[in-house]
Image 1: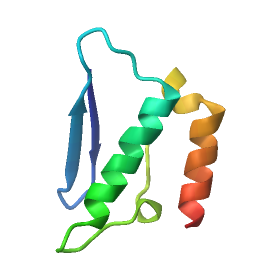
Image 2: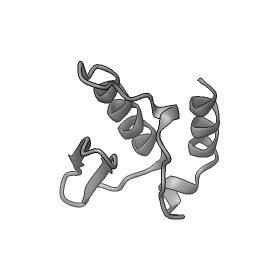
Image 3: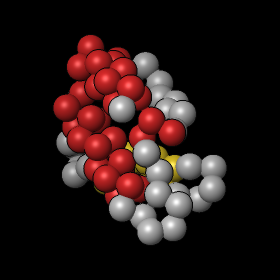
Length: 77
């Protein structure tokens, strides 16, 4: 499975899960954090997670309470 995050201006982060590995809420939060750290370190036009409009489906990993709480807190920073 591939996990992909991208912006309209071409920034992209892709991670691949091992064969048979399942993405849970904790793994999804970690992916978002890693994406944010990579994009914050960019020297040309860094991006903050709170500046991005995230769109994800209602898969279990995305719909967990800890994921919703993470996004709520992260968007306030």
